[in-house]
Length: 473
Image 1: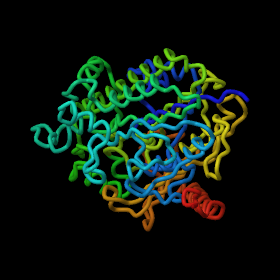
Image 2: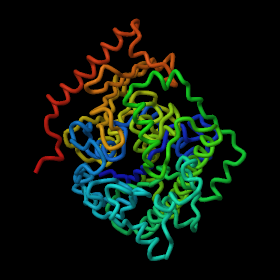
Image 3: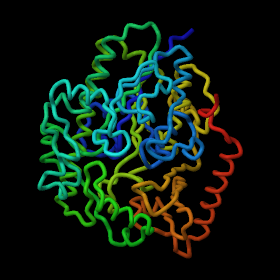
Image 4: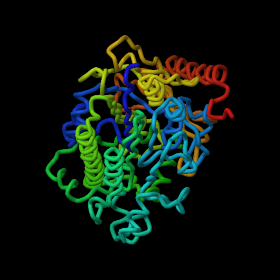
């Protein structure tokens, strides 16, 4: 039997697609991610199925859309995943870092878990102490957090950007990377392994260590202007979301309706410096694989659970369906995977699941996700005609019960439940999504077509997948 590969799945939290130099964004400092791109296959149009953490991750790890899993927001019960299939199929499965299951420490199919969660938990899970926090307590290091940031004179002007003032190795992203390296150095099992490494960054607070922030001192970072026509054309639910994020400081961010160019640039530099820190940790992990003679038989996958508006479109963080949120990096590198290859077909983020199971030689349970393995091996693969994304109303997105997105290569539509408002964009003519065509008479036929496709998708999903396998006994 052919030796099965080890598989490392690296998931960052809230990392946009436009954060990797090799993908056309020269202002980003990402030498190790650039090498991963050169050595592997990059999916240029990978989009998440939910616009927030837990629903997206549960969708990925079950192969079902959020409406099928019933996991629609953070702290919805999520205890099972296809990791069970890998473990039952002979893989030793380990999680180091963030998964965002609920409860945080549920096995979810893993043989072992070393949990690191959000840097600034304030609502669900505030009482939970993860492995990073235990390390900080044992070392006598005070964790930077919202209660302390609020005491700063510049808190409301900082847009969540604060330098890490403790020892560099105590930062949660470096802690997670070093923990993964320690695990790899000590692994002595004959079984192939599946290792999920969940970096907490660049999710806010945007808190890079000063030495990495300094790397961006002289770099010209392009930031799109926020157009008044864009803001005016957004549905009332999104206008309310903007105001909510001004009034409530989620994740240590006090949003601003009209931030200065200087404030926007400062936030963006902190964010990208955090990405560069993760890139550095990735480089250390790949060197560890080489040192332990694991490189030739280990597939490395790099991706993120959703993006971040970073004040683009006038918004803070996620909870919207703009490209800055739904489009994420996705890179595969390793044995039998084509090198220096770009795939432009449409991909749902959850399609990673059956692809991993195929790479491992394991049979997938029934899923709504589809395998991308042919694309990785240079075969014909046509991708998807439409992509979908969902977001339930919650304590942040307060003025709509449910949002549903449908996206083709050319068009995007966002439907708001119980509302006459919506969003419609021609992505070919308006890739920046500045002009909402929802009420334009000449585009009503296109809107009706996409609404029909959205309806058919939901009905077909319910017809063919009435019960997600995670609810089976």
